[in-house]
Each structure stands twice: as structure tokens, then as C-alpha cells.
Image 1: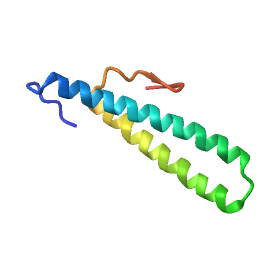
Image 2: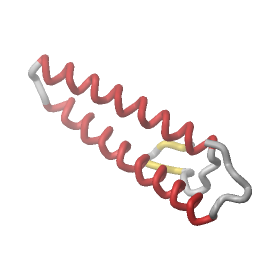
Image 3: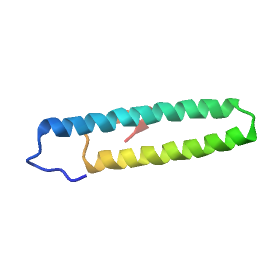
Image 4: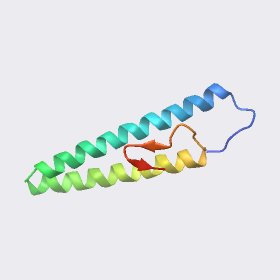
Length: 83
């Protein structure tokens, strides 16, 4: 994401809020998936949850990268993960 010095400030804040909200949502999904993983016993369900955790981890990494590139000020501490 390239920052335009002449960009609409509201649009930039909207983008910051979107990234922040999506990051919080992904963190919550990761927590739910881990809790479910600890409870299931079916091998197919375990495998499915492993793939789901990996997907969420990759999406989280993408969001953090975007936040850092865009220098999002509102994300500095989320879900016990220091950025």
C-alpha cells in the first residue's frame, strides 16, 4: 500500500480501521480454532483445523505486513501480540 500525501484523510482512517477490525477478527478466529482443536478427537476434523489455523496465521501475517507498510497508527497491541 502506497501512502498518498494528498489522499483523503477520512479514506486513510477508514483503511486503518478496516485493517484493525480484520486483525482483531482473525485473532478471535485463531483463538476459537485453537480451543476447538484441543477438544476434537476425529482425525479428519483435526486435520481440517490444522489447515484452518495455518490459513488464519497466513492471513494474520498479511494484515500485519499491510499495517506496517501503511504505517497504521491504531494497531500497536492486539491479542497479546506486540507489533
